Image (cartoon, rainbow, N blue to C red; front, side):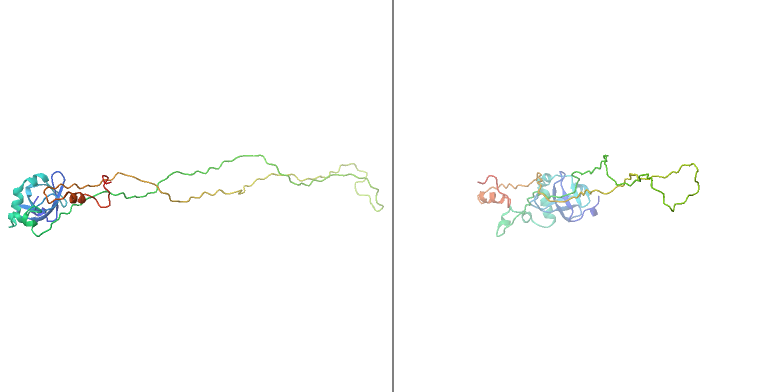
Length: 242
């Protein structure tokens, strides 16, 4: 890697993956790491302390404890900027306390539950049609002819026709109606299947994590009441409280 690969604003991580801060200034042989939660003063690191560069992230070969114990690096960073070591300390020097109130903001994080819904198949409804056969009777009126033979006196005006005195047989058809069965399908009824969406309350639970702050102080000016008040998370009741 080269000096041009290091830019101000890049995030700096220690060897154990802890985010230390950001690059605030680049020097020919070293760069500055901003003062933050882990460092009460601004620290300096050399370019050969960098193990890897991943995008905008710098990963060092040193842990944060190794940087904290290297007090000579903090002093060197102050001298390189032309500043005294006293002006770089945070809440510890008497000069910083005189007529000045300083504070350090420590973020306290907790997880919250977010409910997301998706549609899934909860079941299905099947409609089956079965065919059954049954015997059915119907009554139908029919017409048929009947034969009746009568002897009546001859009319005086009757004439003798052809074929007199000839033997023969005369056939007279006798008719009737017969029933012929024919079937056709008809719609007897309909089965209607409908779906209705309704809402119901359903509980969902999961384990969430929450950061708790524990502050330890020494000295007569540090009051226990202030320490206990500062460790309470707003909106969360202490289980030890009556």
